[in-house]
Image (cartoon, rainbow, N blue to C red; front, side, top):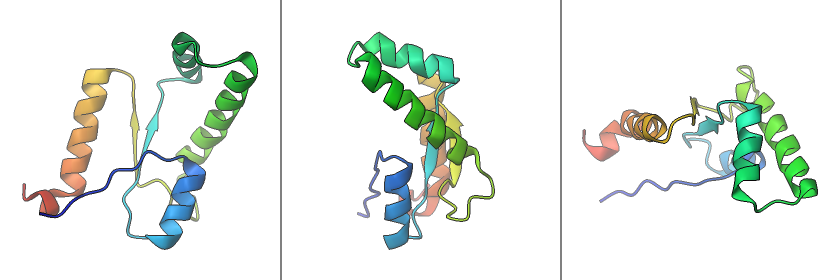
Length: 106
């Protein structure tokens, strides 16, 4: 049986990975808003104000790049918004099924 690896990596990691494996399919998962991202991170209680600021700044830069339709690296093949766990899970599964229909023999 063929296996489909799934990686959770940031934009920089995606860029490096695509240089080695250009046939890779990518999905950029956005938060519903910058404000909701900050609320989620604060709600976890795992960040100091300094690390929170760094993570939010990095996320904002990644979201700008993730929205770039003319990205010369073609880093983002698919995009989705993680706004509701049920709907987001369903969207993610459907994307995987559509992308890998042949491999999954659907």
